[in-house]
Amino acid sequence: MASAVQAARCRSFRELHQSGCFVIPNPWDLGSATSLVRMGFQALASTSAGFAWSIGHRDHDLRLDEKLGHLRTLCEGVDVPVNADFEDGFAVEPAGVAANVASAIATGIAGLSIEDSTHDSSAPLFDLGLAVERIRAAREAIDRTGAGVLLTGRSEGFLVGRPDLAETIRRLTAYAEAGADCLYAPGLRAASDIKALVDALAPRPVNVLVVNPALTVEQLAAMGVRRISVGGGLARVAWTAFLQAAREIAERGTFADMGRAAPFLDINGSFEPR
Image 1 (cartoon, rainbow, N blue to C red):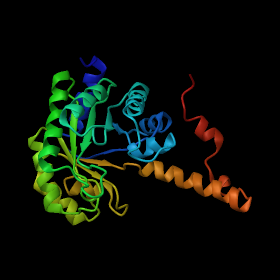
Image 2 (image 1 turned 30 degrees about the horizontal axis):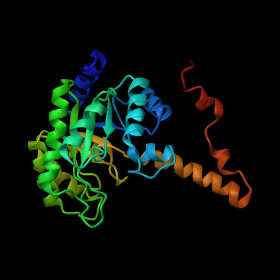
Image 3 (image 1 turned 90 degrees about the vertical axis):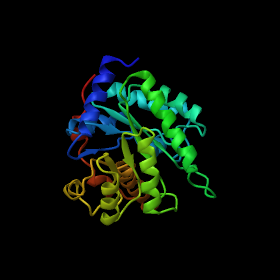
């Protein structure tokens, strides 16, 4: 059974999806998560890539226990709803997805997403029938807990070399009918594609991943987008600065990039003492 805290976070997370548009940024560890909360963000989402890199692995190369431990750390460390990037559910068959979703809910999350990518280049998407059953299994696992966790159905065609908008809409419509509360097609860049997707799925809430930095929150909101995430984007910004500074030291023996960093006292002072 869900705790009172988790149930309250689930309710507030669902309320965010009822109208308007909000940004749900993606921290990769507890430090980045608490920083984002202090900036005023009302909810957070994990990033599989950002967390994997932080512990020395590639994206989609995590064990289930590592993912669950990370989600528990985030949920216990912040006081806002956390949505889990739960990848493919860490299983192929619906029964396995259901069992793993139940384990994820026990970490305290307020939402999670299940994607339809197989990570097999010869057949990069699950057959639609199996993909729908996987979403339905996740929905049933959520409902059995009574927690009110919000389920996001993801269709990965635009990330895996199958950029077919009509097929993406067909899949997401099927996922909604199977119980997904929010719909998500990461990889869309063109404003016209985003608008077409939102219109086709209305009034269901749609999440958009920022892959086109020219688009603004105001523009996406005007298209009817309900939720905006950045995926591994913030982690990539941090890694870019780290790699640039470290390579300068390794290759040139100079430290100019370190001189551009925020002052130690500014960063250290932004965290709460124990």
